[in-house]
Amino acid sequence: QELEYAQFYVSLQNDRFDGKIHYKVNCTEPDILKLYIPKLTLQPLIENAVVHGLEPKYGAGRLAVNLYRANGSVFIDVVDDGVGFTPGPSLLEGGGEEAPTAPGHRQIGLANSNRIIRHFYGIGYGLSVVSAPGNGCRVTMHIPEDHGTQGG
Image 1: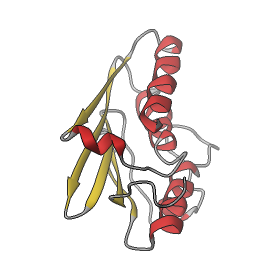
Image 2: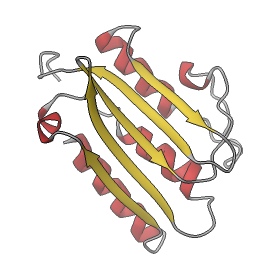
Image 3: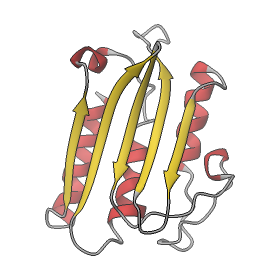
């Protein structure tokens, strides 16, 4: 269901940007799609990629969601080839850092998603961000395999 929300969001943005966003979901194992993901944790990652990475980029851009498993965990990468940025130390802690491409816009979506994941699963899980100016961005969500036991 979270991937459906993401697809809908990207579709709306693609209408807004005349088809400039090339979106793809890559999944190594179809049964990953049956696992539980806390509500409203994936969409902010997609939105962050579009607003801060692809929107300010000249020309078309790519956005991929990669889902895979390793050692009892599920990883979801949201990868864009947008403008990139230098992640600050408080980005995932809710420091409200401003994105260099959107002055005055507080990036709280990533921090909120990180907080939700840690609330459900503990400090060993959450988000990580790899980015650099001009080199796009990869946000990785790390959660345990969850078959819906969290009641979400």
